[in-house]
Length: 199
Image (cartoon, rainbow, N blue to C red; front, side, top):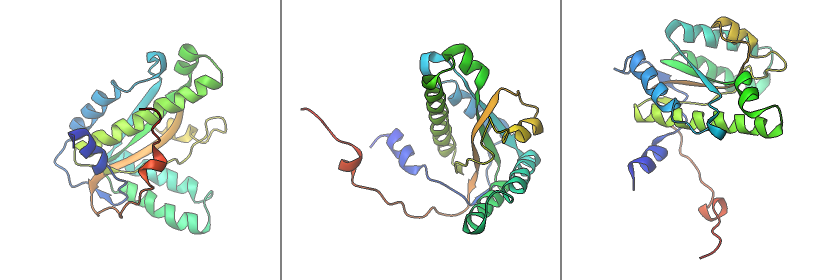
């Protein structure tokens, strides 16, 4: 077993998060910057942009998302997800994942392949940052609220933090101290996930 494999196994979705950590905001932000620089992107285009939100700004962010989503989600979905959003307010902070559409256009053009690339870039960043937070002893979850650049669904969040109009929000990762053990995780058979061809 390698340290990397151990870290992958340790990373789990944590909805019950808090502020019980001795890490400073600067230490967390510095680690996120360090990892973000090493995230692979197509043609080294580096189109991903991260915004790390702490403290009262984090509460303000999730209050806003809750206010928006209460008119979008209904019934059982609202019952489940409103708890997740309330829990996000209790954490240390949130990493917002954006793709800079101007950077995508400049480096990769405007085509279907560029659209695929930017999603891959963000996915790489999300997983890398999640592992970095895990290594720091923090837990988190991956959320997709207020998503929709073309429809303007992410504009209010960008306005809240004075971010460039070209930023397209892809996901949010609220994080903090782990306040409850995650539920057991079920796995499909590894032979179904990974097929080996050849000798």
